[in-house]
Length: 437
Image (cartoon, rainbow, N blue to C red; front, side):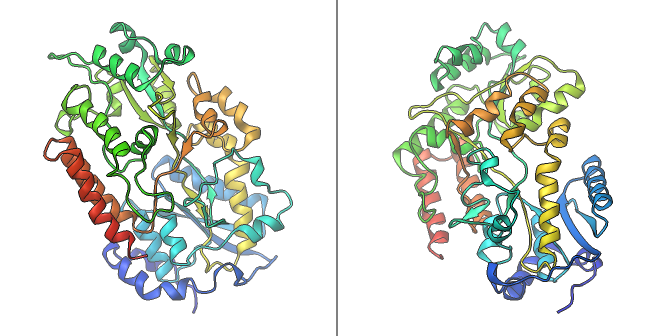
């Protein structure tokens, strides 16, 4: 079957993509890692795709042009994914057999591509590349069920960082709340200390300042709170739901209480977002390194970062790395691998400079800490060294899982259901999904 033209995918709607995938899954995958892809040393054109818009697309196209200039036998065409659901767009491209050689994939969905045998296993290519060593990267960057599945590697990590607490130092100081980093130095930065500070800051009134948005959804920020309480969302083998167990319920109740009992976390109708950290309406939020660069560009200086506070069972943070992967259909795996190494390794300092990604290579850690546009960049690196990084429980049923968990946690947040009832319903529905195998 010949590769179709680039125009074809633009005519495939997102709604049609799942049906196309079901019909064409076997054709697009097939042989797995043992199947030989054609390679050539002559001039070839390969296609690389990623999501983004505006300046990001310009940046990617410039990178493609620079790679092509340095490697005249490999012309790289960058394919910008549209403003719709980029995962559905990639599904459509693979189902239609449109040429795609390297793609940036969201960490939520890599598992589904692997399950459908649509990605090239990278281990043979990695082993043949004498300049490549996984040990050159921070421990934990290659995450199970994100880049690695049953010990086999299908993607290179490309973006994301451990989550930290961003906080407005002026708000903290004006309220007389103890600084999180000072508490951490004393070994006193805990859930209780965080809650006490939020209660001190978030006083009622017309000029109310909110403490922190409670992570009561399937955003990555939910996972560490449950683990710090000793619980899990899914079992370690991802086959059963455990969010209904007492340890997880306790963590969720603590988060719901931030909204319902202590009134330090906003409800959706309060229309408070991370952008309100700058105007002083929000004291803190939990996110990754990419939040810092805009502060530098806008001249906002009243901020700092701290690690997540320690919970009853210690400290964890979450990391959801996206990945660069090669579809099994590529004819140019050697050229695709060379491009992947360029994007992940050669350009890492460039991404650090732009504030886009943190450094995953160990030899770039000091560069990241020095060039992070704010204080305490160490809190993004140390979790890897201390084995505090955990993954989101991603499965091939992520889309359906997300709908169930988000709906039930929203009901608990809004006081329409108890945490126990909400987690019980999550278990009932998601276990049915997982039993499909």
